[in-house]
Length: 619
Image 1: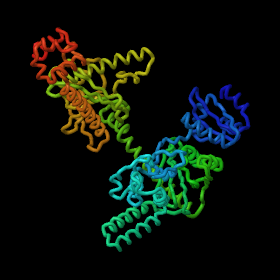
Image 2: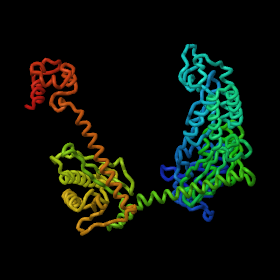
Image 3: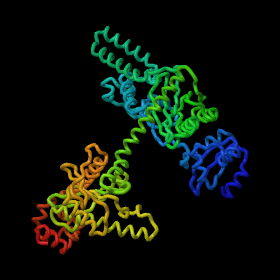
Image 4: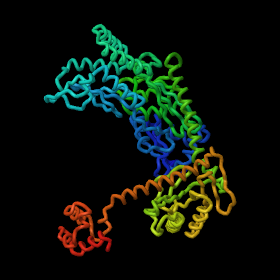
C-alpha cells in the first residue's frame, strides 16, 4: 500500500457515497456504500476472505476517489451513472444492448394509430410489451388490423381536408377517419377494444368475433362468416403461445442467474397480464464467481432503465443485498410502487425455478458455442501449426490469390486471418503493374515482393521509433503464408518471398485432394476431411479467391463503362461534357474533323488535335 492510499484510508468519512478505484487514469471499479469508511477499508484488510477477482483488483489499485451522497438511494443512482460512464473492468457489466420492440398508442390524439417502436419515452402515450421479437409485434399488428380496423397512415388528423378512402378501407382494414367515415367517439370505442386485446384480455375479442360470425351465418353471409372464423383462429393461435402460466394474473418479471466460475447468465422471464410472454438471457462477463445476489442487483440496476420495461413486481432467485433501495429507485422511474421479492413457495417460486432452468440451459449452450468457436478458430490454428511442424500457434495467416481476364486488369488479393478469424480491415489488393498477359507466377512474385519489401521496411522504421510493429499497415508480418496450388506454385512463391528478404513459413493447399505441401518436403500432408485445421485452410483459401474475384469484377465493370475520352491527356471532365453535348455520340465525335472539334466551347487547337488523333488511333 502506497502513502497516498494509507492517508486516504485514515481520512475516509462515515457517510453514504460512491468510491472509484483507480490505476493511473483508468477506473478499475465503482462501488457504493452506506458507510464509506467501513466499506472501502475492507478491501485493504488482510484475511477478509475476498474472492480472487477482488484480490486481483486490489493488487492493481494505486489510488481511489470518493463522492459523498445524501442518502443510500442517491449513492445507488450515482453508482449506476458512473458505471455507465466509465465501464470499469472489475464491475459486473451488462454487455447486451437489446432493444425490445413495443406497440405505442398515443390516446391523446383524435384518431390514434398503433405504432411499432424500439424505444419508449415519457410522452404520455401507452406502450404495450416488451415483445420478444419484431415478428411477434408485426403478427399482433396484422391481426389487430383485421379485427379492429384502425388506421395505419401517419396523417395528422383531423386536418379539414376531403380525401378518398385508401385501399385499406376498401379491404376492410381501416375505418377511414381521413375521409370522415367514422366519428371520434366510435373510433375510440373500437380503439378501447384493441387496447384491451393488447392488455391480454383476448376472451372479449373472441366473444365479439364469434357473435359477428354467428350473425353473418344467420344472414347467409357465409364468406364473411368464414373470414371471421379464420380471424378467431388467428387470435387463439397468437395467445396460445403466451398462455404458459398465470402467476396471480398480473405483471411481473422473474430473474435467475447461472454461473460457471468465469461468466454469468441472467434469465429474465416476462409475465404481462398474467400471461408468460417468454424470456431472454443476458451475459454478465467476469461475474462467474460473484455472489448471485450481487450479480442480480447489478443486472437490475443496468437493465431496468426504461419505465416501459419495469413491471410492478420483480421476483428474484436469491435475496438481494439492498432490495428496498433498488425498489425505491425503480419506483421513481416507473411512477408507481415496484416490489422486489424472493418467493419461497407457490406459483411465483415455480416461475423463478423455471427462469433458473432456462438460465442453466442458456449458460450450457453458450459454453458449447464458445468451445465450438474456439475449435474452429484459435484451436484450428494451434492444430494446423502442429500438423505442419510449426512451434507454438499461428497468430497471423495470410493467403494470396491472382485474378484476371486473359491477362487484363490483373489483381492480387491478400487476405488476413488472426487467431483463426478473418481480419477484414487488414485485407489488401495489389494492382499488378509489371506483368503483361496471364502470368499468375510473375503476378504472385510481384505481389509477394511488394508486400514483404514494404512490410520489412515499415517494421524497421517502427522499431527504430519505439512503436509496436503490429500497428502498421504492412509491418505486422505473418506467421504463415498460404498459397493456392501445388508444389510448383509453392516453390515459385517461396523464391519470390526470399527475394524480397523474408523467410516466413509458407505452405500451399492443392484443391483436387485438398493436400497441404511444404517447401523442401517430399509428399503432401492429408488432414482428416472433418479436421478444423483443414477447414481453416479451406476458409482462408476460399476467402482470398472471393476477395480477388470481387475486386476484379469491380475493375472490369468500371473499365466497361469508361469513356475513351478519359484516356486522352488534357481532356478533363469539363471538355468531355462539352464534346458530348455538341456531338451527342462517340460515332459523331469520331467522324468530326479537327476544326469541328476545335470549335467546341472550351477546346483549343492542341486539345482538338489530341482528340482527333486518339479517336483514330494516331496518338
